[in-house]
Image (cartoon, rainbow, N blue to C red; front, side, top):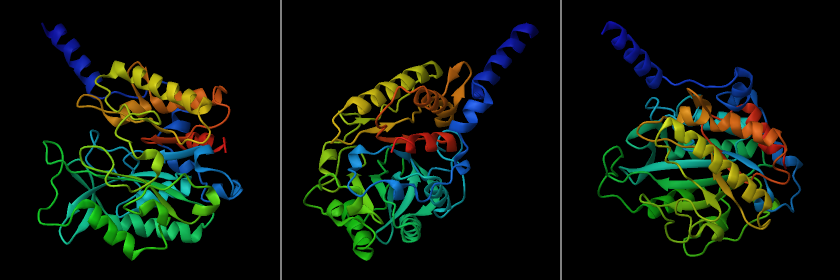
Length: 331
């Protein structure tokens, strides 16, 4: 009986603390080594006439999620109040995924589910403005989502406030020079821009409601129907068990191939992230037990030459510096 109990204890321990499955060299370049990349001006070398759709752009999923432990943390922690975002920008990240709760005083605070991430939307905008002022050759693409659903595990918006889009309009009106204006017009989606038109600006790709689906007509016209996975977006985020990490790897790979061979005038958004009640984001990104993580797989796949033209926008959890550099190398 003691032997059986010891075996069960060992199995429980292994399942409770999965670890990256592959060699440290591959994992280090792709996973949890963001600061090894330093590419604050990489867009400077890209011609002004280049369409945003033609570019390969590294991004982060749930960009500000550094608190809450394994189930909710998706990024390396470089500090509160937007310091983590600043580190990502310096490393070369140019697509960000911001999740906001409606708070008192008609303001936004940054959340991942029920967990406050020790940052407010003004922190996000301050860091973006400071970075773009210092690096005017760059642009940032933002997805902004209303995070709170009021359901178990989520947050609840503070009652009695203005609507989510109305509050966003207040923020945008205070910083007209920060945003690419065609992307924040409530009544009309914007066409896909060329880089020369958006240098030094934040481009709003889409404004998402709490239960999915774009709000109003903010953002880019191509994403007017972005509601989870679609023709131009791969966001199969549910990874129900450790074995399903392999399925997520394959979804990312297939969408990379689709992007590379797809319509050059269309933007493609590929989420490398995933999680569930039983699988933490870090396990999907870095690997667990016998399963290779999405990040090392992605770097291996790109290094093998399977992609020849572009990766599109790739949004990652815990990206490593080598993976960021590899995605940028396609531009």
